[in-house]
Figure (cartoon, rainbow, N blue to C red):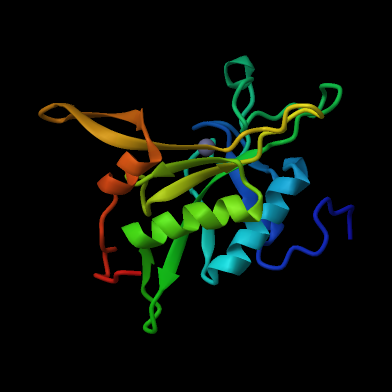
Length: 191
Ligand SMILES: [Zn+2]
C-alpha cells in the first residue's frame, strides 16, 4: 500500500475525495493533498454526527489552484516551501431514514452541526442553505501563530433574487443563514 497521509481514518475513503478544481479541469484525488488536521477533524465530526457526511459534488469543493485562489483555504500548492496543503472542504451532512431515503439537514440539525464542527477542530465554518443537492457547510482550519491563535469564524451565504429569473448569493451572518434554512428537510423530518 502506498504512503497514506491519514492513517486511522474511520469513516472516509480516499476515493471520496476526487473532484475537479473547475469545470473542464482534470479529476484530482485530493486525499494526499489535504492537511491531516482537516481530515481528522472531518472524521471526528462524522463520528459525533453519527450519519453520513458527503463531500459536495461541485467543482472546486476540495482543492483549488491558481493565484486567484491564493487566499482561499481551498488553495493547494505542493511545490511551495513549505507546501500549501488544502485546509478546507465543502460538505453536505445527510440523514438516512429507515427506508434508505436521503435528505439534507433541517435547521435545528444545521445549528447543532455548526457547533459540533467547532468542537471537532474546525475554526472557519460557512453555512450554505441553498447548495444542491443538499444544504452544506464550508469547513476549514486556519492556522494562528505562536503568539496569536486563529480566531473562529462563522458565516453564512444565502441566495438572493436580483430580478425575475436572476439570482445571486451574498454573505450574511451564520444566524441569518440559519433563518434562511428550511426548518424541516425534504422528508418532512425535524431532525
Ligand atoms: Zn469552501
